[in-house]
Length: 124
Image (cartoon, rainbow, N blue to C red; front, side, top):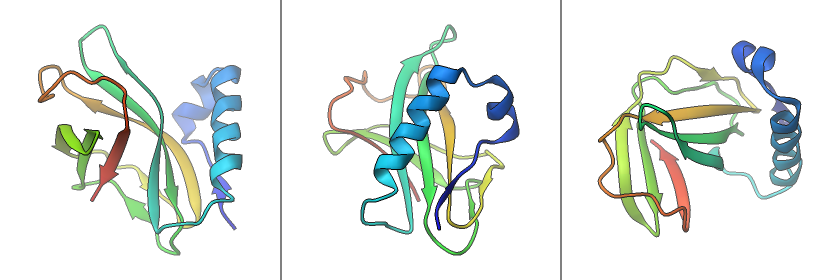
């Protein structure tokens, strides 16, 4: 059975409003047809360093842990790649677990300005 888990730093610092929204999204997607892994975008933003932040709910529906280390992370809009990088994150999502996470695209690393339309984050 799929469970929602918060990484310890998230658990300590997450605002109640944000936690409620993540729990709401989890409850909706938990009933959909499952793939082995999925990243559901919760929000995007630019920070003060002009880095592009993509906050997602990572869903590992498989029976083995999912590591982010060395994975290719691609942000797309309308099937066009806006930015990509190789992950150096050491996060491991346990089997049959969903966790929120924020991917950071460094300033100047995007090929185009995000519009927020038909967006997806692909991890491979």
